[in-house]
Image (tube, rainbow, N blue to C red; front, side, top):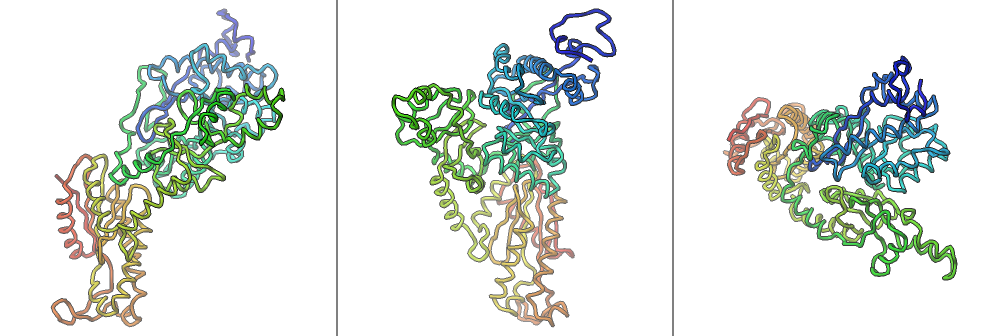
Length: 598
């Protein structure tokens, strides 16, 4: 079909344009579209993925088919170099490219063989004014079994030379975990299969959450690719993904005119008072350690340790101030002190690149909550702490001691604000949640008020100890049915509870509340004597002293929805909830819903 020589041949003759066109013409027909990859918290563009276009005009159905044919004919390496040049040209034409990264798919078969031009990609980037740390090479396990030791060493050399590495389509194949171990990637791109319907599939969300936690422990960032809806985006953000890409953000574009610096609809809501307080606590505990650049020499590193006697670790950053890992002083000692002071090898070691000593380190964003930081730290082995970033750039180092201090202070504060019977957030936390929720207009908010029906007769008949058991039972069911990100549950006092949802629609919330009501009604029956369960009621005095029949315990629920864009006064919302509470108790099914209007 074509040969490597065609890369440099100029031939406009009709004979050249045939059913088997040379590579020169195939490259002319190919184009690249760039799709933005953005920060899930700020909407700021972090990088662009280069996607091949016009494969059909080049005689191939898909990009994979094009690469397969080039591999079969023995010039895959030359084709990939030509494609890199095309992608770099497109990337440099973007007015928004400065400070971002180019994600480039690399097939990688036969990588590192003799005279492989892909091992000199760094020199090509210089022609375009790009640094290696701006380029992320995307690899998948599609051809992993074909990679030999030479290819593995070559990929490691590219990574150590400064290129970023991404593990693409994670979850599609059967070798990803091995690749995650062998390659030590900087990014993990989760396959679309696990993101399709993640907002309604708990198993898929569990998978993504688990992968995100594992990646962060290994010092990698997580990219959710091919995200198409707002619900998928929010579910990916809640699961711990750092970056998002897909039609929900923007479609791939071959035009530089459509590029943006950020996307408003991706920006997360401003953190509430409690989250701000926790972020401030984390920031105050960050250690301001000396840092070293990834391309520095061993001599530069030793100077840092000499002038910072208390430092046992030093974070390593790239040219964009993003962390690449840490270096332990103990590793240097074992290496540098192996020979005597006059040992020529020891002297030569001073000029050795320090990147060979860089270790992966758990990584997290400053926006992470303390509990998630603890999970990340606890999942790592022999870790000294966690690298903390802000907008993906190094912000400081959180030591194990500081992390435990933050968790201890958080637990003390939670204990002071817990209901002593159920352990749920108490009245103060409930008031704070309502105040913050009604003021946040970025999405629909659903506030649910719950209280028991016929609780006083039950208490009078069975005693307060049994009444406390019923309250504890409901609190456990409430935690089971109202959980996950963007939810809240609290115990106001007595038999009154409150739940909040900062995502989803009113019908979904009502479905959850109906399920909670059914579970409580069924489970609380076991607290009654067999006689009362059989007859379905108990006889007790009402508040006026008259003996009456009272149905078995259940709960009433009132749901108040505050629509997106509507701001409300917390006092007015509380008054509205009290009116709905009365309506719910008189309603046949014990549940009422209302949409708040200002």
